[in-house]
Image (cartoon, rainbow, N blue to C red; front, side, top):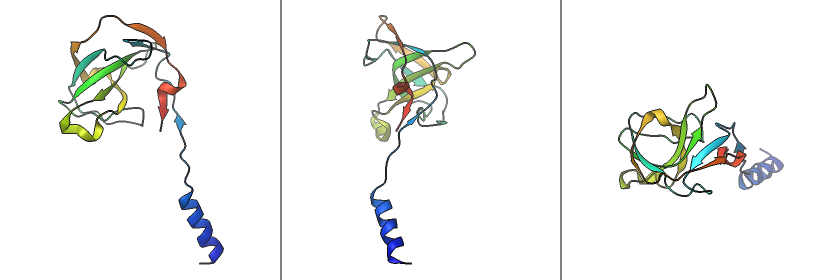
Length: 129
């Protein structure tokens, strides 16, 4: 291997760039507890395992508790998705990670607010890191 190739390889490894990916929108509007979607709407229990098809979604295991932050308003013929986060000492590796999941794989067990706002989604709602 020649020196120029080795140098090029080293520089390439040291200078890795991260590319953010804007994914397709799942919905045009969402329901939240406040304008920033920072309030928890409800708590839900996972009924069936769900394997994430891409980086927008959470991997869920049956029995986990999910805090729901927003509910997407599905377009006609589209699936119903909610966004939330898993908080549990048992699943500490996933704590604080927010992502989408099908509403059909959870059962809402407790509502924290009835006061909701309808907000337009943006491209940043479907951003993958």
